Length: 335
Image (tube, one colour):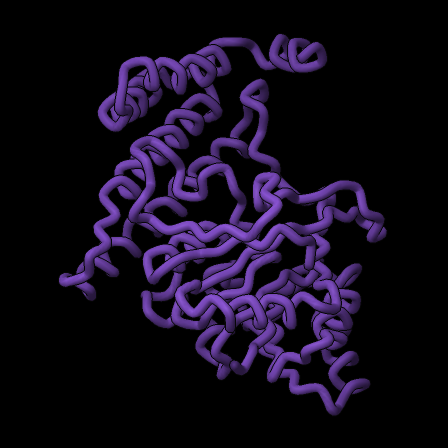
């Protein structure tokens, strides 16, 4: 299998050389490396160009976006240029361990029905110190394959696992068999894993092969005890990601009308998750928008399998919306 390494960079001048060096030093070298800079306003492009000049033997192609396209646009451009059978992705601030590509390629060679493999990752800080572990495999000790045909009603398609793109390697079909990611999708993580499951399966390999960087610009999912327009934007982006997966599923079913897999439970669960994000977004938006909150709550009730599930998912956003921010922060200190 030919392998393409993709690095997406944006304002990564502090980290980009470490990311490039890690891809270049793989024990099984990538057949090509595609670096996309998303119109960085800092010194990131100059550092990439200098790295390429200093390593003329490396098969690197550098694509500079004339304007900021976001993750979806940059990824689409990289995939369109790729010639490999598999895609190893990373951001310009992540670090691939030396055996990442080799281990993942070996695994996919043994698992022809798997269209992606996701590993665990170390969490590093601004200065590359290990500060934790990203448990993408949910504590598993053995590899596991996930599909959509056995998904229980009400359960998220990842079943408690994480789809971190910086720790994933996918067959190129995951991107070529579907339309490009929609503009504005802020991460390819969940859609890529979901597509792999539609095509046959996404596997999880419980070894850390990536060093995933957490720094000041990361936006967490929040605790439910803080409010603000920035979190509302985040939840609306989560909604948009689910819309992408619903569109992907519709496209797949249209292309494969005779396929035995019918992801009805997965689609129902995605609609439930979208309703949850909508409710959280309404709770975090500026002011107390009770009409918007009630409209979102109505959607959540429509997609909740039981009344108990609806109440379990709706009380925290409601309390968060009605509780003054200062009190929320005080309570958060004693959680």
